[in-house]
Length: 239
Ligand code: URA
Image 1 (cartoon, rainbow, N blue to C red):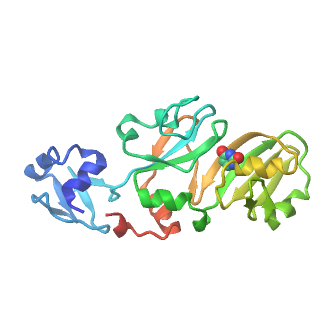
Image 2: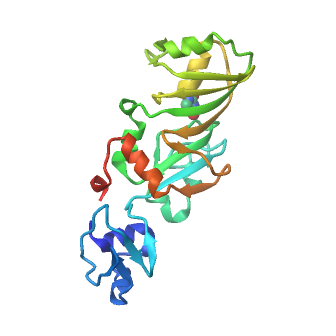
Image 3: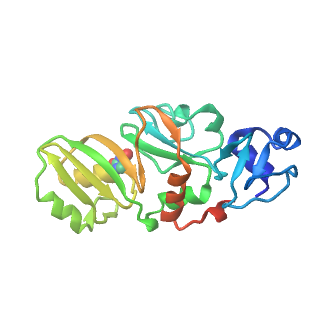
């Protein structure tokens, strides 16, 4: 990828406006000043602008702690879209990774890396997703083995694969699933006559939610690399 495009994608302005940094000799690649803005860079190059290291990820990936009452759709429908919660400068750029129901809270990712997005949502990659569940009546210990065995008919001709259930107390459990079927958790508990009255996603693969409800943050380079790893992508593929 050309360095002017890279800087532009990393928030330094349009391709035209980033030229000023080169004219002023403010851009370095691996410690060397560069004035040619068409120079190609790769995933291992260290880029600095005005002495500040620029993350060498040309893509933006964001975590949101989704509140209740927002839908995982690009536009407002019956409820407002989660896109309203994304900082304005990224709103047109990123897409939602998978979906959470309007009444589910917790970790939702957004990225403009299309391949990464589709792989994270693809059951083929078995990305673990952990949810905190609150149900309406007492959890029976036998559910742990039933969920572990998998192959559970959840209706509409679909079966839920093996999942890990950890019962925390009578009404609360953590569950880790590896698929991502529509309403999967609610259908899974529903099969055994439980209503899920609260559902909160805490993690997705290596990414743990650590922002307050309604807040967002950009994933750092290490987290981004971990996501590439679990989806069998390489940083070089992204450039
Ligand atoms: N399973 C559900 O039932 N709902 C969600 O939002 C996510 C997983």
